[in-house]
Amino acid sequence: MRRRAASMLLVLAMLLVNVGCGASETETDTNESDNSTNTTGGDGADDSSDETRIPYDFPELDCRQGDFNILNCEFVWDMYTYLDFEEMTGEVLDDAIYERNRSVEDMFNVNLVVEDLHIDELNTRIQQTVLAGDDIYDVAYSRGDKINSIIAGGYVTNLYDVPGLNLDQPWWNQSVISEATIGDGDAVYFALNDFSLCAFDLVWCIFFNEDMLTSLGGELPYDLVRESKWTIDAMHELIKLGTNLNGDASFTFDREGNSVYGLASYSRLVGSLMTGAGVRFTEKNSEGYPELIIENDLFYSTAEKLASIFGTAGDYIEANNKETGQNYEMLFEQNRALFLGGEIKSASVFRDMEDSFGIVPSPKYDESQESYYSWMNHDTPTMCIPATNADLETTGIVLDALSYLSYTDILPIYYSIRVSQKSLRNEDSIEMLGIIRDTLYYDASLTYGWTLDLYTKLIGKISTGDTNLASDIAAAKSSVEEKIATTFELMND
Image (cartoon, rainbow, N blue to C red):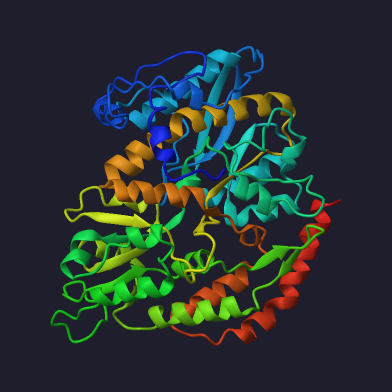
């Protein structure tokens, strides 16, 4: 997405009144309307909101009441996966999406039809319909870490061949498009846009218990973030404050125990913190060819820093099992973890938590690092257009309009209601959310499958404190390079 100042949330909040088609006004008269209007500091209206909207020319299109079919991911992992509703629900975000869709339907005389499927069944459905030659879905979502197989199989369309898609605009995630485009730069087969809210729900960040940290004498890290002092070392110092046996014999997890952990999460956090420190698996050269670059001082030094956290009993607990209670979200909610590494969606899980909690981006490697980087989970449902789509022009017009209206009308509500107001409890965290939004990074090397096996092995070892990594990289190097070559040839054929 386009980089904007952290104050973008204030601008977004002023757009709350512009729900619906850009050519008309729709009131948000729901049981949460008081919350939405409070974010503007007045009656919910703002005379400058029209000036902040990016102009958009809605093309003339008459679909003659035809169906526009979308294959979507059903609710999973606590993500907000919903693309449409049969009727108004009384929830501000749900109703804004309902109104957006009805506006587009009226504008183009089209009927939006959303089919929800389990995330692990999406790719198979796309392959089946294309192999059968069936033009069923105009747009489809695929599980991100599996999409490479349907690209290689020729099951999806080059998005640059779709008229009407404004892929250079901020309602299309620019980090994804930049990283996913390789070689000549005239082919990209998947993207993320603001039509679906899943992608931001799955962005990684750091949560912390404000009340607990204050009682322990620790500094709330907001100013550290602002002053570029929020680093891995600074985070580790605060994590240590929360490590406490509380009478238990060891830090081995006991559901009925009293021990408190400095940090709770699971191995994926290693990947997020690596990204936050500026570590990259691949980098494109001047010809757009991706090269494996992980063998460098930054990678090994970051691995050492992270291993010292993850390998210290009490400082960190691997916890991703809800059945046993050894789960990072459950431990944090029960005040048994001072810090938590997780995705934005976790904020909605903590709505009923009594203690105040905050959110900050993943820390930098050191203070000299130019920017924070917030890792977008490569599992996120990723948008593509099936190769059997016979009317790309209509698809481009409808999809881009839906994405534009999501950017102008849905995102403000998503931030200020679902994430900020309902889940985050102070202005500091809302500012941090803006920083996270402005620093998104998408690792296409994982989506294409080049480095996925290597990534899984490395983060698995670091999460146990093991830093013997050089042999793993050496063993995987030729395989990674072969996969890159295969994709490069495919994308530039």
